[in-house]
Length: 192
Image 1: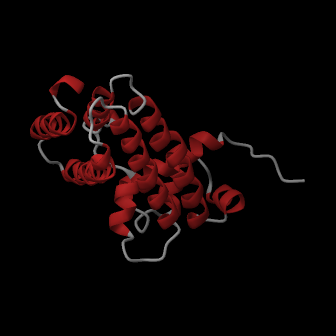
Image 2: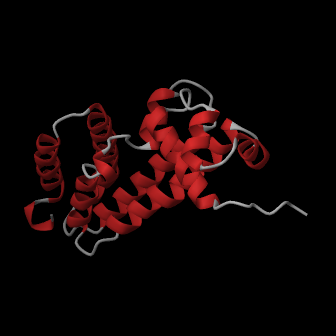
């Protein structure tokens, strides 16, 4: 019979997720994970097998609690252009005014070209976003059907590029104007 966890796993995984977002996979130490999760190193090793194990679980947690939640909250909007616009604008409002960025984006950059445990999550997250964009664009009245897939890919590129600029500290007022202009150019004024 598996040993019952004696800690709030949701809180621990959320803390680990933020540690990896802030510091990157390579720069996160067990000491940082102890501080961010509230767990002792023994609990991290016993419950997750170490840094790679908690990274795996924290990334899965990120997909479920951040990526899927954002898609559901914004890309199911009854006015599709409004949902798209809201989704992109929320990128500018990271809690606590910190710019630790997106775990998908950060890992795609940090671990690019490596065969890592992050690959499956990065691919899944990008797929979920692109599928959400396809669904949203399909609901825009009069949107050309033959342009949905390429435009969804365009939105994914725009989304990821914005996250890189935000993480780098780019001017958020300028990015907000760019987001509004780009989404309106894609879905039209009346649909945004």
